[in-house]
Length: 84
Image 1 (cartoon, rainbow, N blue to C red):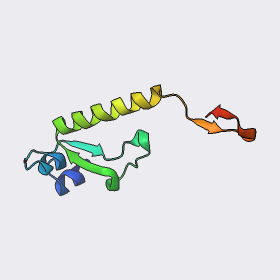
Image 2 (cartoon, helix red, strand yellow):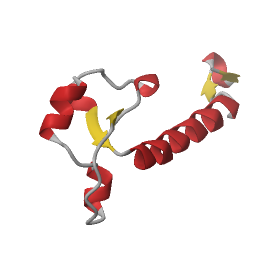
Image 3 (cartoon, rainbow, N blue to C red):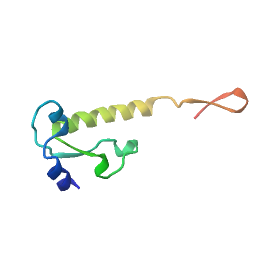
Image 4 (cartoon, one colour):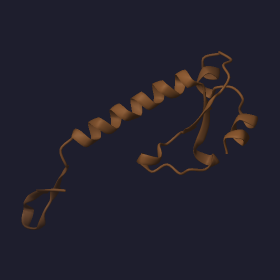
């Protein structure tokens, strides 16, 4: 998968959005596997190491916030609220 991706996209897609030409070195999942993304070419992008690190750090922080958040309240039978 990596070789095919880098053959199709030799440059970092995030850098190209900023008019910079930087070689792609990382295969990244657009939607992380932990968030329901699939492990195929419909959910991959070519990134440089720096852009991959920035994206991975943001995903990690998002995951920690989600884990620390209290469970949402759901309406129980009879009008009472219960934690999911």
